[in-house]
Image (cartoon, rainbow, N blue to C red; front, side, top):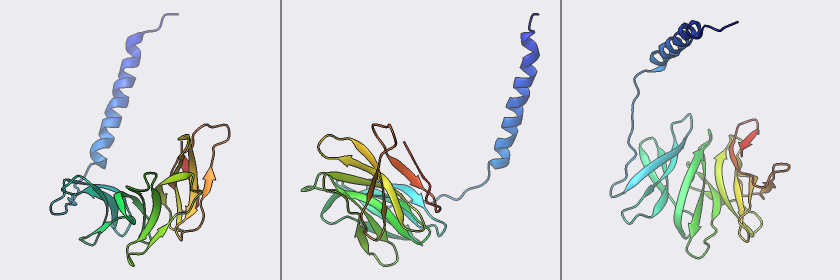
Length: 192
């Protein structure tokens, strides 16, 4: 039996029309807000919560990166202790942001949490042979990210608490490299 190749064309065309019909329904008007600090070279936003608190960073006029929190129209620069590079990646529903920083003396860096309401920072503690790169935080204050071993550069995931508690390293069974990118409020972790 010979297939009629043209008979499938209308089905493909119909699927394309249906898919295109959905796009305008999803489109709408949006309000854009530029996060700009006077004298900066650029800014970036990585996380936002339901209170519209934003976590990210900016480059100062000399090109050095700093953490940034935007809350109700107010910008706050957030830097780790003695940091030459800071970035915030996420903010949870309670207004706690998570990020990492590097210093000139400590090129391997550290991860921390930042409470927007109080300005308090908490360091995430781990074996000193690893440096942490925190990526996400849930409403319970559980933080996830990656932990890179200083000696050989192997990557593990990590889970820790925002209160500065110890961090537990994660290795995917049979994997050679693990990295945690997100965590939901139930504690499920996603990564590579």
